[in-house]
Image (cartoon, rainbow, N blue to C red):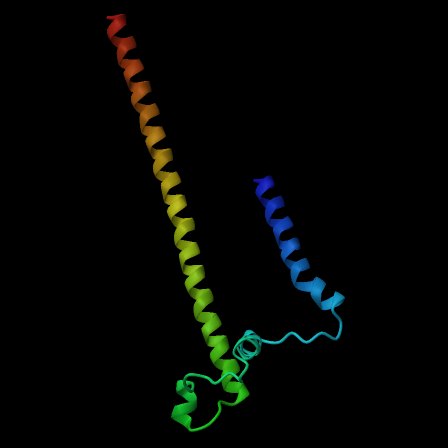
Amino acid sequence: MAKKKNTVAILLIIAALIALIPLFTLKGAEFGGSDDAGSKVVAQITGTDYQPWFKPVMETWIGGELPGEMESLFFCVQTGIGVGIIAFFMGRFVERKKIENEIENERKQTKQTKQTMQSKQSEQTSSL
């Protein structure tokens, strides 16, 4: 068990370093989003500005661009739903493993009980 804890601790440290090192080594760098980077690559390849294929559904409904607060709200809700789904399945896997271990332990106990009962019966029959 201690080996697992060490492994988890090392992986957490590595993940933290991966997130923090660029912030300190690349001072003044702009970390743009993937949408912006994709648009630039398409413009380089085609030689023309990128034109979206469709307008976002919410922008069509309200007749304009979404306020930044609403985008943040939708992002947080989406994140919460994703975390909930991941946590649900992780919990299911943990509980499944516990149940499998309990069943295995019960099988071992019943097997040991049968063996002890058989040995007692054989002792009783041999003593008669």
